[in-house]
Length: 330
Image 1 (cartoon, one colour):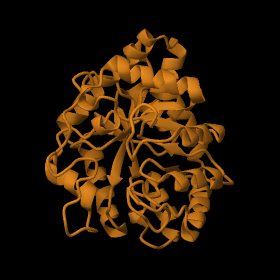
Image 2 (image 1 turned 120 degrees about the vertical axis):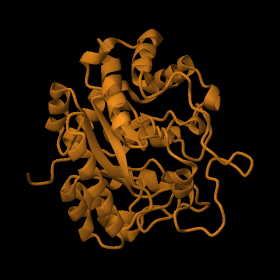
Image 3 (image 1 turned 60 degrees about the horizontal axis):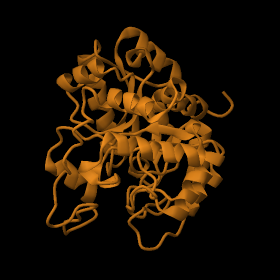
């Protein structure tokens, strides 16, 4: 039953190579939202696109690019994994609103307004003062709506997230975060945010990153599925998905790039600490080969119907992409 479904992981940044693409295909995942950029500027982001072009050329039997929803169905039919690209920051557009359309035409389907820190568009979740969406941010949101680029507020602060939900003419996503009623973390989202997101048709993707989970690396599959059930009770199953935030086989310097970019001269440890500087221990039940299938079975055991489980594992992402990717006027 699982392998017959459209299965979408709403956020990964693993070490992309042929062996990993094989494991993705064998896992039954249909499509993955892959992070293209963290702190890269416009020129560096173009090089990231070039790297993915090379991946697609060298592994065309395993993966294919996703530029519209129909490509996901094609990926499923052809037995390949679809890859759709997003940025975890607004750095790819520099300070130029016109680059939103340029990046969208290049294949950037999703963009976060912030990555933990204050950006030109909004406040990040690590800032002590949340000043909300900026003047530039308001225009950027309208332009993202116009060109069909989905807004992601996973790493953004509370007021900024609420304002983005209200300002956007289309549903937005929080691609990888958990409710803070399950685990208190700067990156997790309040009940107020989750309700506002759902009221405007948005989508939250549950994160498997241990720092975001109750019990951390000891979080059990049943505890995770209970968190999903509690959130479904709060906002409805139509607004739930998975955004694993899986970062398999990445070296420590990649983690340091995520946390520090070029903005800090001293080491910032993010959700870690000076005594816990590395990647958290992986969840034993969530891995490249069977992680999503384990969640599928866990949700059914939790009491979700097959139909609702299929929504959480893929159909809700399909609906968000279908509504959000078509440029206005098309």
